[in-house]
Amino acid sequence: MKLVMVTAVEEFQKEVLKLFKRANIENFSSSDIDGYKNGASILMASNWFSGIKGGNESTLFFSFTDDEHIDNLFKLIEEFNTNLETNNPLKAVVVPIEKFI
Image 1 (cartoon, helix red, strand yellow):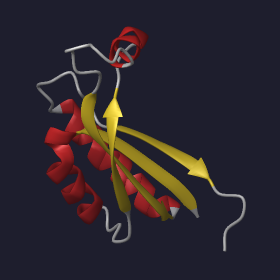
Image 2: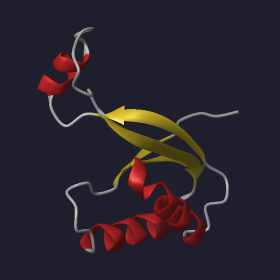
Image 3: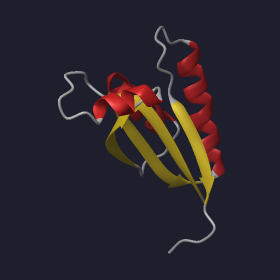
Image 4: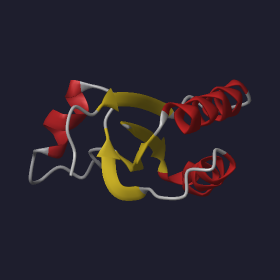
């Protein structure tokens, strides 16, 4: 068992849900997050009086699953990213799980 995590800008949330379904990953969770591209944005966001939005609204998806499902998901994500017209590709990582209950 491993933990797969995928981040996406808010506009791609529905597409990521479809990718998880096509990869046969039925159990997963998501959380709204703010995504940042550089350190300067974080500094501006920490200013209470700043009128500039600090980060991009994004979503983090995660699931505990096996290698077969993760491999399928990664293939689908690679395909999705090659057809993008924006500079906001889906990002994915896998983390091995040493113990679980």
